Image (cartoon, rainbow, N blue to C red; front, side, top):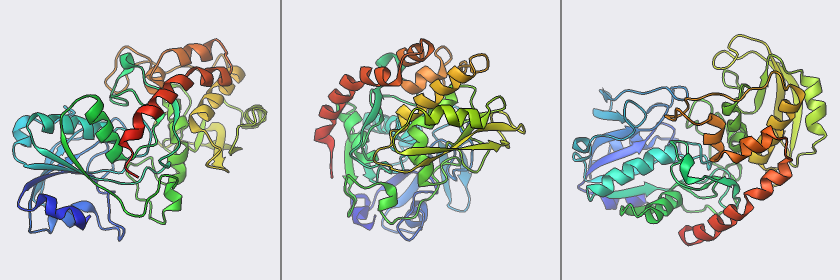
Length: 378
């Protein structure tokens, strides 16, 4: 991090971050910036879940003055998703330090890009402190978002699992959308594209309340799809996204059915749980806990579809698609917003095989892989 300080010497700085972004010694970036004398920290910008990462999903955060850090913290997930130009005129340069999760639905990168677009319009510089993609920088999976399904969980046509660092992804969108931002990326040292977060030797710091560990991030690209259904994705438990179910699911019957699918790289255990909040708060749910046994063979998005299809077949009278609104979208089904298209939902309703569904998105995935090559920094 210190390598980039010369780039902002003498500047009025705006820092987009939250408390989870830390050095290798676990000192938060904001603490490091606050004690520097070579520049002035004039503003903090906080993504969804707030600066302290304590708010649950889709809870609006307010802008406020932080007395301890003596700086205003502007919410990027409040009444508005971007700050007023008058606020951005208080800074000379925007520094971004956010831990992305390598999945299109994760809103941090979209907050960063909306901010970058505003800063570009004011001819101010952007510096991104790059961080690892926890899911590695090689594997790319899932359908590419269709333009008519752009939302705050996907502002640009990329696949669900994009295989880019936050710096690479911001540079990619900046160039492809011709945002015109002057971006400088402070590259990592020691990271190679094949590394998962568990291979880095670094400590996991929770970027958001329901992302408590690497094992959560590993399943998130598929299990977040349950947000578009009436199946609990495990929010309100100690294992969000790894535990899932509903009051009407019989765990042993489900396990028997899902195991017949022989999904690579993952095992399931029957379980019961009682969510403390979110879907089915205070009610006993039957379901399963998933365990990734081979992260390189595991395809989380396809696994999420396998789970949904299995539950639909077992409980056709109980399963439901969640209705709008969802993430500022009031017309389209939340599941369609997450997958980035309407045809996957339609295919599941027609009971098409997951293999045939997966085959249909391969051409778009191939084209994305070719396009991303020139933005790879490692």
